[in-house]
Amino acid sequence: MTDLELAPWTLDCVPGDAMPIWAEALRDDNPIHLDPDAAEALGFGRRTVNQGPANLAYVLNMLIAARPGEYLETVEARFLGNVFSGDRVVATGGCDSPEARTCMAALTRGEETDPVLTVRALFRDPPA
Amino acid sequence: MTAAFRTWLDGPAAREAGGAMVIPTGSYRIDAALDRRIRESTRAPGGDGGLAHPIFAFVAALGGLGVPVADICRMCGSSIEAGPLLAQCAIRYRRALVLDRLYAVSGAIVGRTTKPSRRFGSAEHVSLHLCVGNRGHDADYREAADAEVWLTWIMPQARTS
Image (cartoon, rainbow over all chains, first blue to last red; front, top):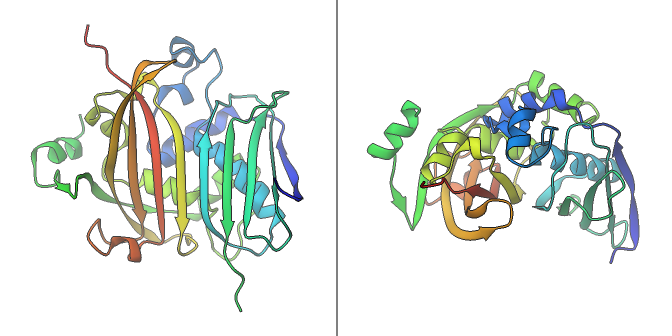
C-alpha cells in the first residue's frame, strides 16, 4: 500500500518503428520484436512485441519525472505480459511518503487493469 | 554460429567458476546519438549533464556481452527464432552511466531450470548476472562494476522431432 500517488506517465502509441532501434542496441534480433509474421507464427498475434527493456524504460520515465534530481539505487522488475506495437500504455506508481526511498510502479496497456510489468525502485539517500 | 560462440564452446573462454558459466567479456559505448534515439523512442526528456538514461544499465549489460543473445539461446538449447521472453530483471546502480564512455561488460549464466510453460510447452528459465564497467568476472568484479544486472529469460526448448 502506498500513500503518495505519483503522477502517471502515458504513451499513447507504442512505436513499432522503434523496435529495430532497441534490437540493435541490445544485440537481440528476436523476431517477435521485428517481424509481424514471426510474431503471429509464434502465437503473439499480428503486431510486433515491444521489448521488455523498452517497457521498463517507460516506468523509469515516470519515476524520474516524479523524483527529479534523485538517483536510482536499485530497480526490480517482473514482466507479466506483453505490450504490442500501437498499444497505449500507462505507468503508475506510488511511494509511502514524499521522503520514502522505495516506490512501487506498474505498467498497464489499453483498458486492461492487470499490469504487464511491475517495478520496485529504490532511490539513493540524498547527500548529507 | 558466430566465431565468438565457437571459441566460447571450444576454448578457454568457456569455463565454470563457482558453478556459473562465464560469458566472454565484451564492451559497450553509450554514445550520445543512441541515448537520444532511445529517449525519443520512449518519449523521455533530454539527458542531463552527459548522463545516460538509466535503462542503459540493462542495454549496455546485454548489448555489450561478448556474444549476442542468439548465441546464448543456442547454448541453452533454444533458439532466438523461438521467441524467448524476459521474465524478470534487477538492476543495481553504483554510479550513473556516462555518455561516450566505453564500458567493459562481463557476465555469467548463473542458473538454468526447466519448467512447464503454457505458451511453449516446456521452457528453460535461464538466469544471467551481468556487470557493466568492470574489468571481468573475477573475485572483485562486483565492487568495480558501475551497474549490475540480473535477468531471467524464458527460452522455449528446441523440439527434438
